Length: 122
Image (cartoon, rainbow, N blue to C red; front, side, top):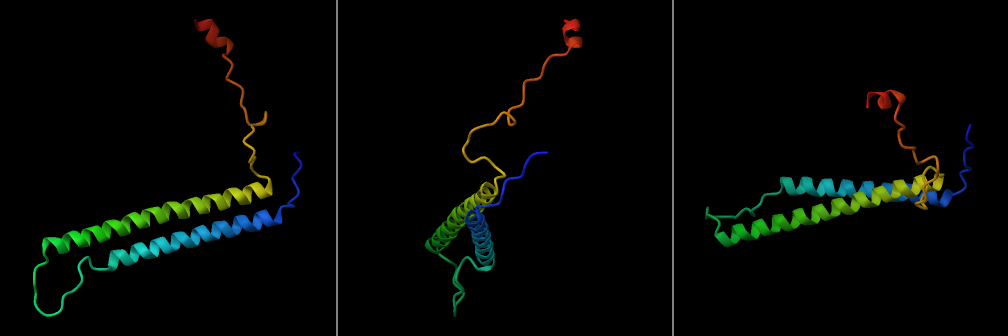
């Protein structure tokens, strides 16, 4: 039975949990901003006369929407990276993953050996 490692890196675990929760909070913000974008009209409501929007108005509205979509995409990627980093930090603090990048002999599986039956068929 393998020996479990002592859980001595409390600051690392706390930082990992806080980073994970911060990333989740960022993702919630992104989803709420996307919901707000979904519910907001593309063109501002005009008061008074019913005038058809001009090409400049349509182009400005399209540019505004594309800018918001780009910012939401960047925020989503950033939030996902923060969340992922928090999980990795928590696992590393618990000793559940090797952060040095060195592979141990338990990680490497030997190549499959051909069976005797395969040699007889050839």
